[in-house]
Image (cartoon, one colour):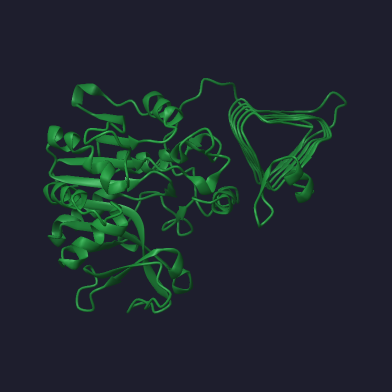
Length: 412
């Protein structure tokens, strides 16, 4: 990576309304994922693995859980001025919250003025992926552009779900247009069936980023959004480059997960991303020791699988089971269990996601469901079997039939 001074900003202030009720008591980046992780761990791990050592996390809504996780998990050595610091909305420009991602940076410019970096890497906090940002930083410096936008190839049929980047015909590393969810997108010259979708990750020259957010802050019609306002302004000046994730080589990546990137902003995408983890050859591999995803190191006993009191043997198939969990004569299939889950005799957990400290009683059935922390399922109870019954009990049931039970609920 370049010898220039690099500073990282993680935008973690979103409400995550589409993930309710999982975000009823926490910020979206603090939502547990994959058993031992929080969503923000993926962004921070990528930055740390890429060599960044000065990173701030800009928080706003329901930030206590997120702030606590960052302070307990992401502790770097102060001897080398290395840190990951959670920075709440400071209201430096008046008695108001952040009004957008660009405004979050505008209200936090004191951080850049204090550190005086040459380059600023700005990333979202709620995507699941691996990426070596040092390679993108080098490409940005070589381009001479004010901003470089990370992009991933997506089928053209999905173009209306993303911000789509239209590249210059003569120089495919330069951006000609930034289109928000276009209905008539044009495919890439080298792959007509694909488009370049913005990943929500940016590399800026520090001085031009500061000038851009100050300018944007003075524009009354702006939504003060990085993707919707700041990047299009750079594009209009011919000062924006694109970095195709296909150029990125992450150590230890496999052909199956090399270019994996998923936005987990909905219950359906959150559920599907967990299913990507559990295959024998997973679509996203948590076990890449060459590019680890770091998380909070729990002081917990190992997971335990035992016969029940009658000597019945349980089964666990294509699943992830976290530390401190005890499975006693239960059947677990295609599921992810968080730390300290207790699954009792005869219970069946299938195609489900279970967060920390959930207890599922004897002969209960949990199918195609997400159970938030400390949910207690009584013996013989059923979740995800009858959608109407689940709705009648106040649970969230998606159009695709995923049942979500909020934090601390007792199900009988």
